[in-house]
Length: 380
Image (cartoon, rainbow, N blue to C red; front, side, top):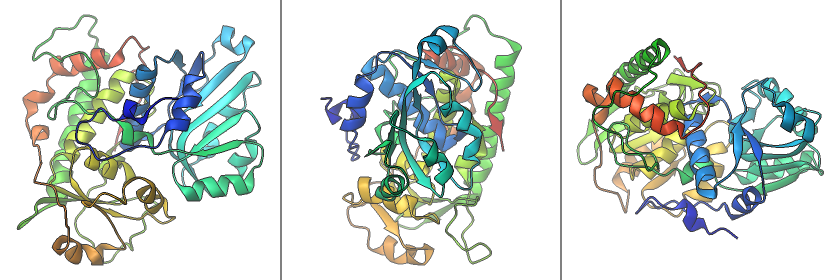
């Protein structure tokens, strides 16, 4: 049995993921394909935590892109590990990934902690080869009610196990490679320069969004409202809502490339680190803020996902609260026992921290020998 201490290298972090069954499951595998769940910057955080975990467990795996073939493994049969997240919800065209689960020589499938809601057709695909980890009780009960062949288990969201390095700039994000102040890495191409330009564009977008969503409140410092702008929002639009910024939705990618995942994850973390208190209905904004030791007020989405994960993971932590709505914010501010000291970090503003030399050094360190897939991160 693997101890949960394997996932608790963030000193002082109050999150204690309950993933012993998942660790045992992964430890049994000899070799597997890994298909990260594509999606927004919150999904990049999940993928980064998954890559870190595979490193700790010394897993032997290959990142598999959609439609990519490996004749040897395909012929002999293979195991697939599919990344966790919120894809299997009626809003997100989860049917697009059906072919991933329908290969004729697939021997076993493990789906890392995910949410499931109104996706009966996906659940119908599963048979005895599937082990499905659900990140909240509601998804677990829903899956079992629709399918008695697959194996359903509960486990906490993978992002809760993310190991953070030093705050500011790219940080380390759990690696052993220090990032030098200046590094002329070999093999630099025009494609890398274009990626850096895209990266800086997202940084500028984030700075603008943060400026618009952050209020300075006496006795509370910088309060940032990172609220959903998509179909999962549980807030009434058109009402008296504070200015907010959907930081998760500002970038979207497949997260097949470890270097790019590290970079965009670092940018996301640095954006959240500009706040002292975070108000959000984005699960991975909240988890990241908790890992950064922020005071966090969670709001539920429109089908109970935030409430379900909060109940498993956060309910015992005083400075992490679940509000029934924004109307409860003034009372919550006045009654937050166990609040943490201000901890905002403004490295996002320091442009030199995001230079091309540091970008490339972080990219290469983040690759860790993996195959590059340098396409495809879209800036919204």
